[in-house]
Amino acid sequence: MKNIAPVKTTSWKELNNHFQEIKHVHLIDLFNKDKDRFKKFSFTFQNKLLLDISKNRITHTTVQLLLNLANEMNLSTAIQAMFSGSNINFTEKRPVLHTALRNKSNNQIILNGFDIMPEIKFVLDKIQSFSEQVISGKWKGYSGKKITTVVNVGIGGSDLGPKMVTDALKPYKNHLNMYFISNIDSTELFQLFKIINFETTIFLISSKTFTTQETMINAKTIKRYFLKKVGNIEYMDQHFFAVTMAFRKAENFGILKSNVFRLWDWVGGRYSIWSAMGLSIALSIGFKNFSQLLSGAYDMDVHFQQTNFGSNMPVLLALIGIWYNNFFNTETEAILPYDQYLHRLPEYIQQSNMESNGKNIDRNGNQVSWQTGPIIWGTVGTNGQHSFYQLMHQGTKLIPCDFIAPIVSQNPIYNHHEILLSNFFAQTHALAFGNFFYKQDNIISSKYNMKNQYIEKFKFFEGNRPSNTLLFHKIDPYSLGLLIALYEHKIFTQGVIFNIFSFDQWGVELGKQISQSIYSDLSNKNSILNYDDSTLGLINYYNKSTLC
Ligand code: F6P
Image 1 (cartoon, helix red, strand yellow):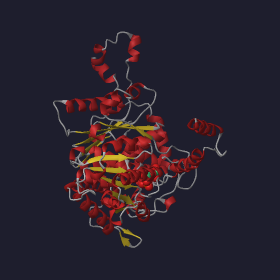
Image 2 (tube, helix red, strand yellow):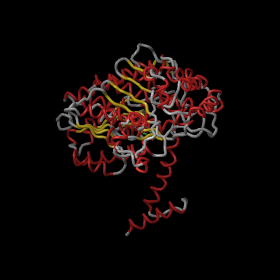
Image 3 (tube, helix red, strand yellow):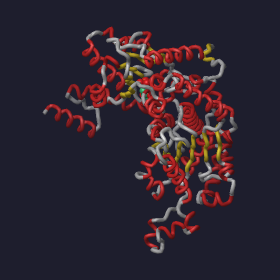
Image 4 (cartoon, rainbow, N blue to C red):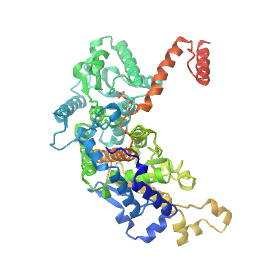
């Protein structure tokens, strides 16, 4: 991958100059000038997805300059490097091949001289066979009863993806009850133990490394409760499974070798739902639907690799994000799904984006002098409208956002979906055009009686607030695969242009190490004096309080 500061490129300088010219131009003028703006700035993917980028503060020149930037940063070579298994996770000396997990072509993927597709196929077959046995009731618990409940124990990428997808695809769900345990806070387990029956529950201990503190402690506690209840360690074989690359550790934990589902070091945690980390997904919606999820992602992979950048959806979303993040200095991006089933999508994208691109050292090892990954947040549809949309419409900050909705509801009742979509369309419209648009037509002015000049100021919407719209036909396994892969490639593209390494996550390590040291101080009730005054004061206060 090219290793240069993006700010040193010619296109960056040109973008800076262009920004000075365009920064005050209003979307109203952009739309007035070009009656075909929607046609020119919207893109379709089969009949599954429409992406509209026309409500952005961009012109054709902006897009052209951004595309030049992508070319100057050698995006094509970087894409090729990822798909072909180069060690682009440089600081961990690993390739990044989550795309191989959903490779639906007959092409080999060669790593260190070997085709990795047969082992991927082997694990997929194992997922299929096991999930079918559990769903059909063939797989029995220790007392001979059918399995009714699946508990995934994992955190970060070993939790958020499976949890988000099983929720998003609830309409495709079978009879199995799904639970996800991630937090070390014992409240999660306390509540779980009140609900589950060990006789009919299986536990998936999902950890790529099998060392993550939260997962290991939760898994050990579950094992202790299980053994206390069933009294026979051999019964674990029907109930405990591991998804990991650390075979030996899983076996040492007490998990049968054949109950381990393999992961590889070239799958990053936050990109792992396509692997055995998606076992809970396959159990919840069946292997056929899981396979459809992979197909959607694969088709987005092909689109990303083969479509010219000017109509390449992940590339365009990435470049627009950079336009706001690095030229308008916007800092955040909101993810706003208008679909209850997608309620965990913002949280999922938050991890994949912020853990990937929240870096301040460039690929040369130098501190960056430009902004990298944005702050990602959001919530579902109209709930947000009655919460933070006030700030989006009238606050002092510019918040670029992605509005995501299905045309067809999975659960139509009366006219709810039409009303939901009316809100969806209304919001992007209001953000972009404010009430200028209506003032011209005298609609708002008569409605709100704007004669009172003072009050009028508070009712004024300046507009010019940008958004992308992603309109899906329906949120089904295939289109969810498209959507997730779209964001994965957007994040990758931005990482390439920021000149950072997107696939490591060293920033999570320090807190982990310090917590281990503090834990021994808490247990000893005797603080070793190596902390700052505040931390030491807090620890001592805690220790004294627990002694009382
Ligand atoms: O938060 C750090 C992290 O390493 C994530 O990247 C990862 O998804 C998560 O912890 C869980 O890791 P593991 O699957 O090894 O338990």
